[in-house]
Image 1 (cartoon, helix red, strand yellow):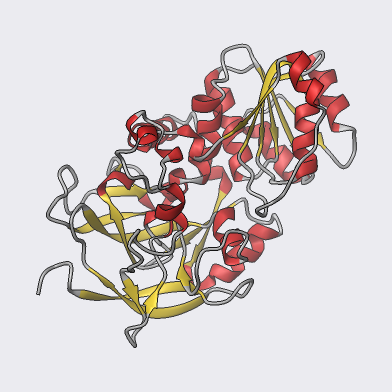
Image 2: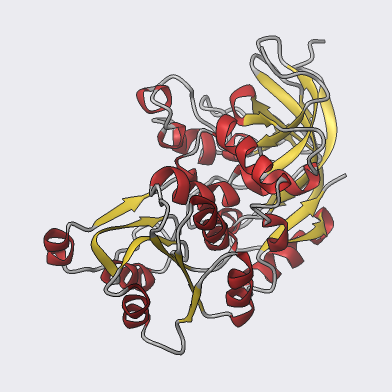
Length: 374
């Protein structure tokens, strides 16, 4: 029997019905084939995208094994794997084909097959790698990994090698949420020295953006949220100003702090009315990036002349425009130097408490849950 045909017993968290809790179940996963690697998952971040897919904002087929911020140790490799080895520590990130025009240009987050590879519920041909004990398929390949599991398969191009002296149980969120916030600032918006930046939302993504803006040299960094504890943490992480949007007019406050408008902004809440505020508070030639994911079909309104006459821009951003093989190790290095302390955002839970972690995240009690696995 080939390695790819062998089935390994695993434990998984499964979503079986829309808006229903995760269930902890036993399953089986095949071994790696072609350019795949099999990873023993040490820990996986719980991301907002996992929860909106659980609730079917995006129509990923169910039942499904989600999880897309995995980190662990390679246990087996397929015959076409070139650079990774058994025993390597890796962070799992989003899937991309690697050869379409966007991928070839260094923009894998805009891969022509992005939706199929990350939200399709299986391989592009419809097959899955995970099955329940009765042999029934479970939809998987979520973000090319499905890491709410004791073992996960990914391709070599979305398994990012990281130093073995870095705490692997902490690093999973670098594969999506942390990468998204930091990359939006550094790669997409290109926030520069002496500039002004506003983060609409001080969750894990928004606070990652705050930390990145500090690294990038912004001198006015504004965090906007409704939770006082998040705003306090934002100040600790580098925000020069904080705004509680329940207490003041956000647009007036941002204009007052910046002397007329902010140069760069990021919207991570997924709320249309917040995006509208962010657009209104831009300076001339200002740009706002959008990373918050609402339900499909959500629309926002703005005065077209506010964009036209001021030369303002709205920019959609996926995964922080990052080249993960380059950017994730850079974030690890910044963390090890004490310049990007994203560990202050996290709280650990065992996999069996995934529903408590999800509830705490939804209520804003925990910024970034990480599930310890195995």
